[in-house]
Amino acid sequence: MNTPVLDNEARDSIRKHVLASLEYMGNGQLMLTKKEAGKASELLWGGVAQALEAVAESRNIQLSNHRSLRHFVSGLSRETNDRSINAAFYQAEALHSNFHSVDMSVEDVATNVDAIRDLVSKLLSMIPPELVNQKEAQT
Image 1 (spheres, rainbow, N blue to C red):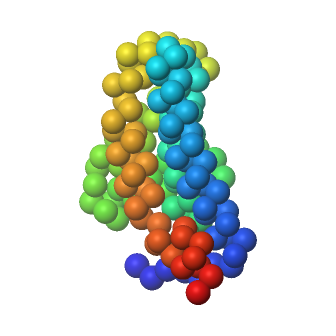
Image 2 (image 1 turned 135 degrees about the vertical axis):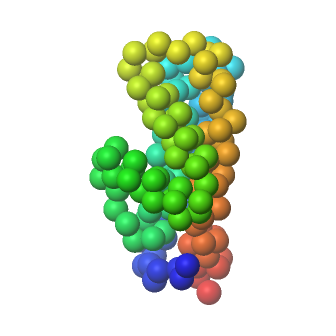
């Protein structure tokens, strides 16, 4: 897949989404150690959502709501022939719901972390490095 031509503002936005994704993932895991299931759930969901925003923006695609996120994820899953992308997304989306109702225990949330971490890693690897690396972007 060819890298779309993106201006510096778009590249900056992609980098911000990537950094936010990584920060949310780290903070989500920290909240698990503090036994804060609701906060951990929302932060882990945020890590996925920010990674998706970064991938979409790297392809010049705008995501505006949960439905567009679901549609985009389904497309990525088909494109890569990797069903785990779709499955892990739905795990993360369940965590997002958990933030509001906090029906899941810390242990329940923790069982989803590996799949969500793998998903974020896969998503971020879909972004061409030259769109994330500032030095490469400036050359």
